[in-house]
Image 1 (cartoon, helix red, strand yellow):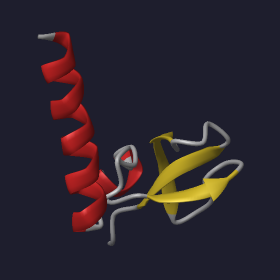
Image 2: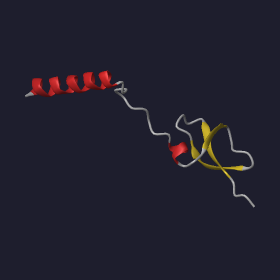
Image 3: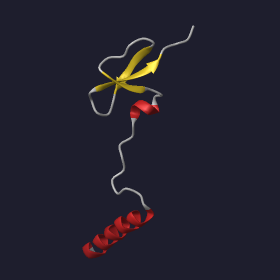
Length: 67
């Protein structure tokens, strides 16, 4: 049974390669999901801080309210 599972996993990797899909998917960009932009350092006007970016260095900033 172990060989069967190994063969199935190898087949899965080969099929993904043929389809052109990466084997290891990229992490989800949570800043873009929140409609934000990554800035190095801190957020400046008219943006406000909504979180950190995936790299851990930048700040995820969103545009402020319009008056």
